[in-house]
Image 1 (cartoon, one colour):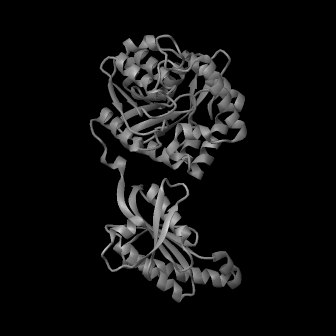
Image 2 (spheres, helix red, strand yellow; image 1 turned 180 degrees about the vertical axis):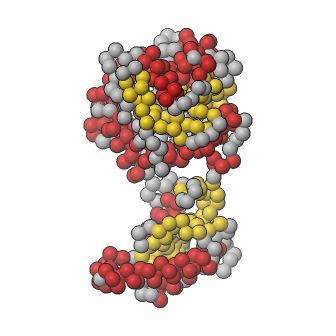
Image 3 (cartoon, one colour; image 1 turned 45 degrees about the vertical axis):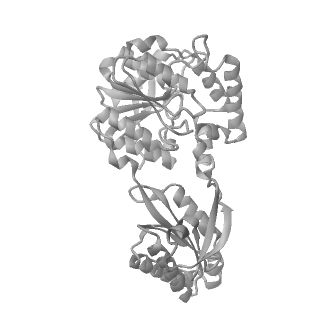
Length: 444
């Protein structure tokens, strides 16, 4: 459920903010120049990331002035105004002291808050953040003016043309997911027009708060994925070297967006740093066998039978499938139109037996189903499962014909020597899944 959006008053401006979770420590998130506190919840990886932070904290998020639901910026808007906006949000949220969590261009605001208002800052967490964002002789890894101008034009053109190269730069692990591409493109359109995006990107090159770093005396954690493509790792190394007592950690991965890739690894480090405990529930994953079922040509059958007879047949199908799921101790995760998403714990043998039983039971009803199975590590949420294992099972099912059960090589390889027979269907590329995958048909 998306949190309620409220407004803080900062001078004459209204700043939109939300509060997530009821933990003992307040965390103010400063993600840079764009966040969109309502749209961000529509991306499942971002939602999970924020909700997990909310498990150990009271997370406060807001739209920066000029972005999303907050008021527009005036021409004379300054860095000091950004500081006042952040303090106004803390006041409105009833937070006397908070840990500040920055990403990217949120770094200068977080650094200044910690240096100038230490009574309001409990700790500082900086993921892929910067103190300065443009080239200087003693800061020669940042973009030069002409490089920044070229990238600004590219970002503006991306908005006009609806391309997805920026998502590939910021979150390569999500770039082949159609839902994420659609979400990210809409995110960009809602954040700013092409011209405004160009202007704000160029303005970001003016940030330089390096002189504040010696005045930061709160506990500080600096995190970075050195292989990411947006912020050079030397930004973070510079921060760690110039903030007294800062703890520095490098993590694997190519994504700049923290919720992409192994976001759990970041959350675990942040949780331990702020609370002293690595939250065991933050990285809920399990090895499961995932099964997808689907009725073949359901639209044609519904047209042939008519609405009432089709509803009756569909109800019989659902009852038959649920009976077999129960018999073989599967977990019905959800229905998917005319099919089911089911998971099985332990070895895949019960899932294979269940698939055979479903195929036989539905055939007796005159319904042809196709079924796909894969065994792999899944991400667990309260009432759903996710991760690449789910995508692979869905893609395998999509290759199956009427009355067929197809399985990945992971399933077939796990039960070698058992009572099951398989027919090799060759190696295939599965849409959106890296590599090539052997696929087998289960003998029925």
